[in-house]
Image (cartoon, rainbow, N blue to C red; front, side, top):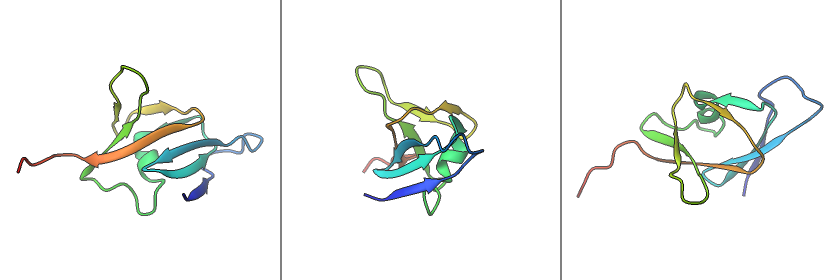
Amino acid sequence: MNTNDKNTGPDHDNHQIPISIDKTSFKVTKEEMKGAELRALPDPDVPADRDLWLEIHGNQDDELVAPASVIHLKSGMHFYTAPSTINPG
């Protein structure tokens, strides 16, 4: 598993929040990030033909993260990507 330190905001006493996108770990320093900022964390960025989703535990549906959405980050949040459109075979 990869771990990437992304200093994405002002230093808050080195407070880092561990999150993951597609099973790659990141440590971010901002407590709130827009979907577009999250999409830019992986290298390369999440491509435009894929959606970014926040995994929700329990009986609730996972949450689609739009580029303009503001996400309040918490330690251990898991995000994943999936094709924006699925063509039936």
